[in-house]
Length: 257
Length: 350
Image 1: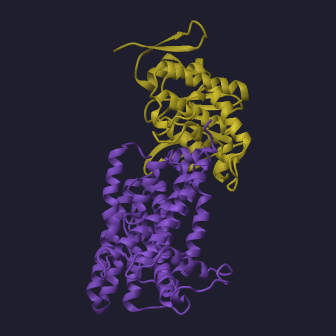
Image 2: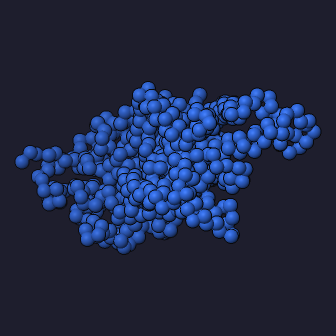
Image 3: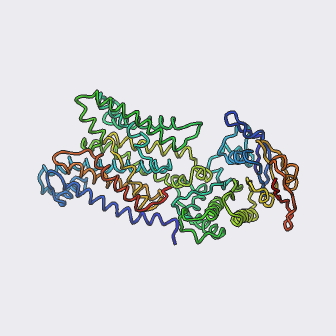
């Protein structure tokens, strides 16, 4: 589905990413974790085509994404960013409708099935009662759901999430990730997400990539990556690892030093 | 049920309303002046000059009245409409692309750049054999575009265009050009009056030939930009968001900036630097009708036309027989009204 092939990125002298290689299969959810400044966000920007790698390439269905048209990329990938949507006086409906952009030709107007798609997704994400409200009247959690709805109507094959839960409380954090999870099960969506919260990452990812200082430190299943000695080395802290009593994924307990 | 049809309903109501206001403004403007003419005569004269429609009409007015209406006041009013529309549209585009409520043809230095080019043409009385009467507009938008390029290059640091730096670069370049314009003014002696007048903005140096130059251009640009309003709306959500939804941000931004600069250049070449239209009109439309560019652009075009025809009527009549530069009027009317609207409805524009 998606191949990252020996991607390296330098910002002038600073080496932010070094020889990153991995593959993501269709329908899986890959979590990218790592300490601040490890290159997680840069990697996601390169995957989405926003940044050009110094060397190496990102391929989507065997095609280098830098050679694709912007609308073609948008049909393959949607991105949910940390900052989410700005506080603009634009209605929720109009915002979500913008997600249909890659499917509409430049001379066309929005068609009936574009409108239907938007209505469906508004219902699915539980925000149809907000559709006439302006973005600047919404809370952070509501805005992030609008952003998900916008990504959904874009009908991508891959969803990139850049710390989408940063500014949210735990209820809203789970809400967003549940929506993504549900969407993934329904459509076979491929998800690549950068998450700071290791516990959330372990719960929702099939596979984890641990970045440290621009290189892949570990890559594998949750149990393989969430290990005491690895995390101690990378995060310079002493975590306790326990098994989640219900869904049996490794979870981390922090102990003060 | 609101929905996507919402904006076209708004347009269906407000475009005709603004067209009627424009028609009234134009009619009133023609009647006012040193020779008083009633509205009926105005419409008869205009009707008789329209091909086919006016062929069978009988002349019931004096030849001098016809000259005043058709050869003196009409070209000037049409020019006012076109310049107002062009400046308002340029302002709306700059504000949308740069996501900056302060952006305007003048803030970015494009107007000054165009003015410098045009002033040089006036100073040396240069007219190209090939371009003929198009010399002034072509040079003005050439130099306006060149200014935008300089501003853009100055603002582009590490291959990234920071919006704050762009505005700052505009201010710097504008200050530099202003000094060159002053130099030209000091050197120009007998042509000083014309150049000075023109720097302050005026629609007085007009006949029909000016309109023939800019009318097709403004019309084509309006049509062209209506195909890019969706992209303008998407840019309002941020460049990265627009990019991820499939907008070729770099390309769209460049096209729109060039188009807005050409509009500015054309407007400046026929009327000098008239301030505030590009800042005030789109803001007013935004405050009244919301931030959807599918509404803002067409209504700004009409609003700009109404505003400038009105302002020019005041400029040429308030101190009769003397005539004021229109730039004074637009700033005098525009600034307080803008302040009032700002107080009345404080909200996030972008």
